[in-house]
Image 1 (cartoon, rainbow over the protein chains, first blue to last red):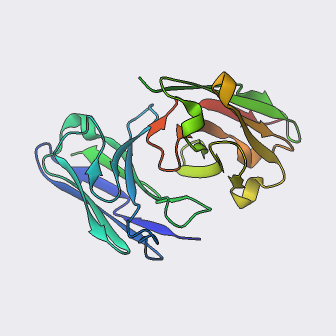
Image 2 (cartoon, rainbow over the protein chains, first blue to last red):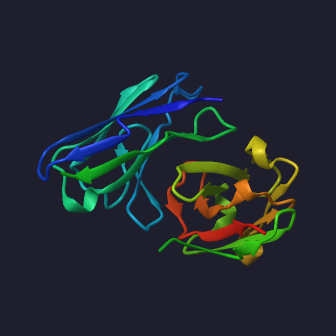
Length: 113
Length: 115
């Protein structure tokens, strides 16, 4: 199974400051079709998860452009250029490349300092 | 607008059974793989099962194999998860999601396994 490792697990950030979350996979997420399938989700307190990023760097509809995804192979990053209050919650990376099973990272809890 | 609405959760004793449903609207269910994901209280997300567009293939996390069955009725725009031989560790909020890439999620339904 592909193990997804996120860091940090806790991320206190000042409003307006940037934030970055790392996600590492135990195997390369490059698919046989040449695409890399790595998604990011945000789960706000008391809500369902919402997908923010798919295929490493593609933003879902309605996701602010302050969110960006990058990386390749086994190392990936989610960046927030300027954190806003609504960004509080738990961020998960997920790989749907080498499945079953589909696997998630442990989650990174972003809070405002 | 894509909508997924789960139902069927509740309190069940260890060893018991429960059937979850997910009502889909705003899209053609038969065009998409579907997924169940769960989240134990205070814990992270765990993939549970997937089912192919026509129901011909299903996949499960090891911990539920032989106990859970995912199914679908495309004509009724419905996804189901039959859960048998439930254990305390199955206690979680269960979400249905569209596609393996999970572009859309429902609000979830809580399953509590306890005596």
